[in-house]
Picture 1 (cartoon, rainbow, N blue to C red):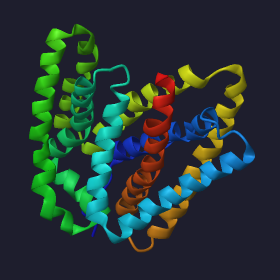
Picture 2 (picture 1 turned 135 degrees about the vertical axis):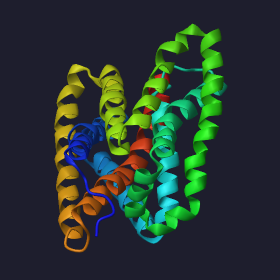
Picture 3 (picture 1 turned 120 degrees about the vertical axis):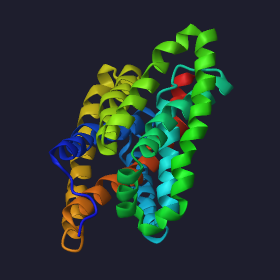
Length: 273
């Protein structure tokens, strides 16, 4: 028996993640070219790194599902927060902004929708996740402290206030909506457009436009194909809802690690120079 049954609203939310959210990571091919992996040999090295990293995450998740879930949540907090703090230069302020924005998306959703969130987590990592459930859900209180510091910074530095407004909006969404819907709204309407616009602004000269289009299409189609294969592989042994959630979120985790290494480790430092 399935612990959770997806309804039309959550299907739409997950479809948006797959059709709108996931393709933004497909820009990684264009980013790799921008970083110098533009010869056939160098681009092949990039692909090998990407594939090995993704397979490594799936392998780790298979043997250590709870640890992998926690690491995925932490990485997501950092990555989302880092994307939302692009224009912040002060080190301490940047750290506060990263934790506030990324933590609000992840921790508030879990805190306000505990039961549904942990059913999803049980699908992803097994029942042992309940052993650490209080630590995961109560981490929201730490985020609240960071948000308070962030608000005080906004009082002193008005330039940060415009972006701060996103946090109460996210908190309201997390309080009232299904966690999958809240995640989808943030991922597709805030994170993805912000990331795509930043990439296009920095690397979209005439020379790179074709590379951006071709690599994005190829990476997107490959992601969808492998996702469909994974879903069809899991479906005979798992319910429909569990199969969909595993493919989307473990797949997201597998893609997030190399994506974050590329974007936060190499692309952002180069664009700051």
